[in-house]
Image (tube, rainbow, N blue to C red; front, side, top):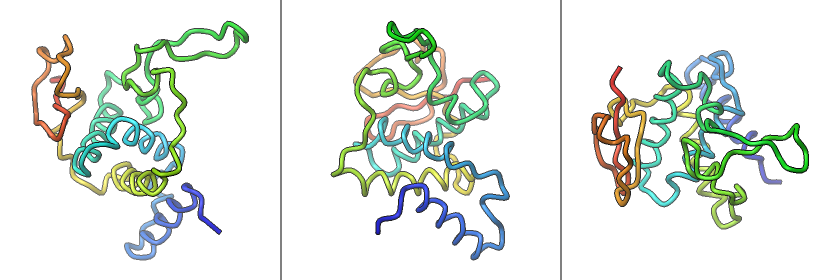
Amino acid sequence: MKLSLFSGACALAFLGGLVTGKSAFAEGYKPEEVKCLADNIYWEARNQTVKGMFAVGNVTMNRMKDRRFPNTVCEVVYQGPTRPSWKDKTKYYPVKNRCQFSWYCDGKADVVPKQDEALYDLILMMSFKIYSGKLKDLTDGATHYHADYVRPEWASSKTKTMKIGQHIFYRWEK
């Protein structure tokens, strides 16, 4: 029997509690928030180095901690304009190519392919560590990034902190 992704993360939280004497659940662990973080890392950086994946996770968390962005990981990841469905006016969908993270509103299905399940499991474990605050932010407070082959307008108004793989990271000064 294969463990689900959530049960794997729960097992990690339990084992971490046995080792440290502190429960991740008592510290406010929320499986849905860890999944949102993992989804964002997977879809934004699955082709990057492990360091690049951690950096994307750090940016997501830095945004959550910044008052100019929403207060939860999921709200940060899914931030962007929406439009009502033409079939059901009570359902809303993201406006294509207008989201904070491009994968969320690219119009493609967000289903992890079978051949990437092991990679996603690794990213889920990374996400748990990032979400729980157990790892140092390696981006120096970055709240933005972009691929090195594009030049977004906003980049000139932010402080460049580093380049990792194909991503350039920036901090939005307070």
